Length: 197
Image: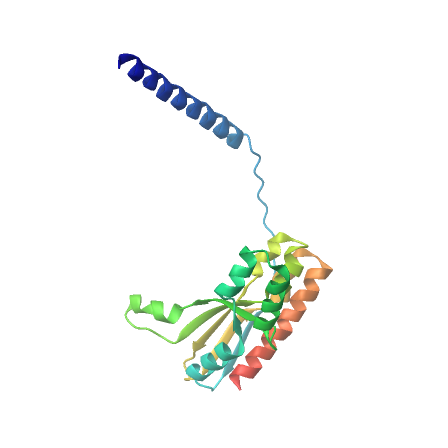
């Protein structure tokens, strides 16, 4: 009985010592890492489009026009079913070439300030377009999906605001990415015109 306890204690001490040595080695390698920081100044064109059309109708039109990045698509990705995934992404993008990835309920969150307001942020994009960009420069993923803010304005109509994709993406100095940025500019402009009329 005494030998078993002593052996167990030695094993526990040995395991603890190995863990401590491993942690020290990990920390030493982490401390030896070189870290570089750079900043780039970029000029971004901000787009604001307003209409007298009521917020509820604009929201309804936008959400009915655009497909969703749903669980079915995520499952195809997890299962590496590439052909089916590509087909599902093309279908979801529809005629507008954009899909809703996520919805930010900024107007609802204002209940924390005493009153809800009509305002929704849409994270929209196109995975097929995004992969054309991130395959060239992974950092382009910062702008995929895009963000558009839709809210009821002071006149009782609706305003849509977003940063123009081509100006966000121009910092990467890539002709391939620039082509996709201009295409996204066109898609967003057409979407705004369609849902605000």
